[in-house]
Length: 185
Image (cartoon, rainbow, N blue to C red; front, side):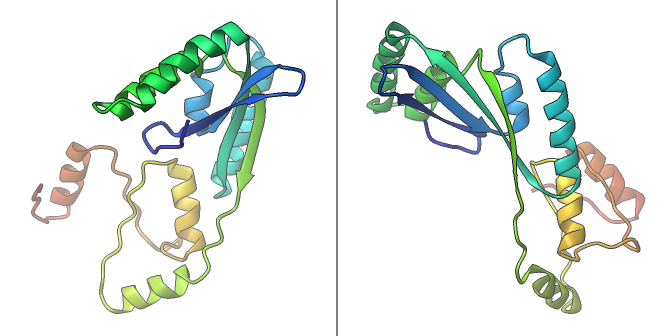
């Protein structure tokens, strides 16, 4: 099952030489955690703390989980998956519904981090700023990660006033409080 921004995860079913079937799933911590089986609370607690620390350090994080599948469970699910995949109408929705059937009751394997190298971003931002171009950061990701990346690429520093806007209403109030007009397109 492919990675889509809406799903924030990707899964694959592996058949081992001994016939065992295992679903492996990787994705955003929030998405994986809501699909985990109950139990194993200590590992979940520790890994959540680690995810938070890694995010605060500006690293991208992924959670990894698995689920053993019985042959009957897999065959039943795979028939539905093939039907959804070959559907001419609402294919994405149907694939998502089928994925929901199997991507649950997972067991957490652990977490991993990736450091995105920013390369020439700081010099590009400096050039844009010198040209008088205003730069905003919009993200659907973690706030801590966005802030750390903004510092790393020199978009912000300790002298920059930061505004954290969590909804359209907050955005309008913030802009209006500075005396600017608000237009929503």
